[in-house]
Length: 83
Image (cartoon, rainbow, N blue to C red; front, side, top):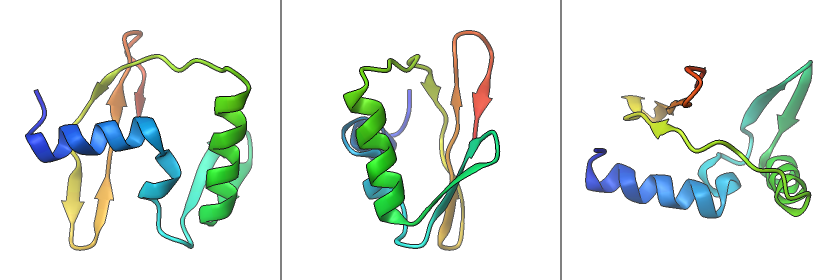
């Protein structure tokens, strides 16, 4: 089980993923598509949510933290891992 502060982070991720990103963050969504900046990230996740798309729930791994950077990852039931 994740430490309490990371369980709270997981709940925040489920509610509003975009709030976790810096204003100038970039996400590689795959297929050569990059989401650049908070508004693009927020808009994308709003569209995904509105489409009804379902995401597999996986095991949220503890964040790796180095200074003011953090890397999160999830291991899905099929063995795939995000980062």
